[in-house]
Image (cartoon, rainbow, N blue to C red; front, side, top):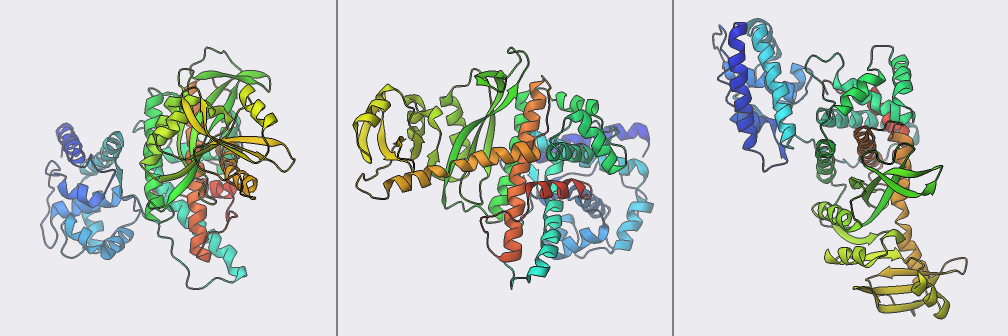
Length: 520
């Protein structure tokens, strides 16, 4: 195939990839083999090839299958197809060619220009799929219950082995969808940028120093700070970054459900809260909002998150950057709409910052139970002074909203008031204990913020809001993946999940960035 003939096949195959992927746009996750079965590859010119047992098309599909599945070796691909014979048939094989036959086809039959076209197909397929928000072959990590509990001396070895296995799979699945706006001729690979980001988060470092220490650790070339920040700033806008991370969260969520870690038939308690990233620059900087004076500033970047707060499963379902025009009503609606498509919500915990009629009515619109502390305004203060503890006030009115107010004493004998739409009995001797235990779940979201900030969030003084948002959402993704890995390792070694984490966030991050995912 001559170089001047190569342009036409590229144009043709790109159109074919686009139209084929459009067939699957209603699905979030599609099988690579289903895509390849429908993909017309007739624009790939046949070389001089005498068909003996296997057609030219089936062998080309085999190569594309191996590349899109990110398998490093022919033997690995063959073994997978042996275990999934129905996929081998879809590729066009009644029986599989051996390693020597495939190797000969790759090395002696197809020429360099055809190999270049195959690389183009691989890259363009991933690019177009990402634009449509489609993921290929989201792996299911089945938590296999061990036949017997390992002896203590073997548990450390098994834990390390399982951690590396799961980190390998996680990195392989997620890397293709983290976009650093790299050109095909980029000096650095995507993996190097991802590893650098993880290193910066683990060391709580800035880009400039983090790049230097990362280079010393790797003892090889790696991106410098200007290169990293340049590529992040190349994103067009906030929506583009959000869309990318929504795709990544969806992959994580599918893996979680398929691994039976989250039961879609069970209801979960959730918490909503804001977290602030202090800012010391100009107040007019995009996405910077005001805040109460703290640590020498009245400015910050602000994010709203919704977390599951069940012990051991404190996943962040969604994180939203907040600007000065976003109302609490708008934020709550976005968070609830997203979360309710993925889980059933049993109860919502929020802090007193949401104690207003608009927020309460928004929660009630979604028919959700809620519990929050009341703000000590003049009316609430008067109730606390006048009424004994415990007391339940049903149908308390605040502007255009009705709810119940429960007054109890804390361990220090101080009266506290909670707003809720649940029914509580003031004659219940354990009422105070129950309320404080329930609301205590909300601190799970505070713990998640600490892990994100101290294990996965790089430092920056950049005034570019795209960099700040990219960093924060990256830390949320890493936090979720750490939880997923930890739960799977518990199940693999002990058959059950206990309250403590089996692997630390630091250890997970370190293994993740030292793992080579094999083409990830």
